Length: 79
Image (cartoon, rainbow, N blue to C red; front, side, top):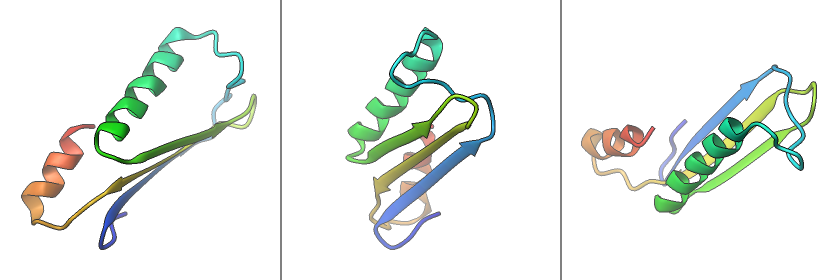
C-alpha cells in the first residue's frame, strides 16, 4: 500500500519457514540479504519474521515523496 510519505509492502506465506538463527540454505540467506541491501539504498526498513512450520512474513517500508507515477515506477523497478 502507499500513503502520503511511504510505500509499505507486506509479503506473507504459509510455507515451512526456517530457523533464522541457523540458515543453512545459502539461497535464502543471499536472497534476504539482497532485499535488505536494496531497501537500505532507498532509506527504507526491512523486517522479517519466521519460525519453523510457521511460514515467512516480510515487512518493507520505503520513504516516498509523491512526484507522479514516474517516480513510483522507478521505486517499484527495484523489485
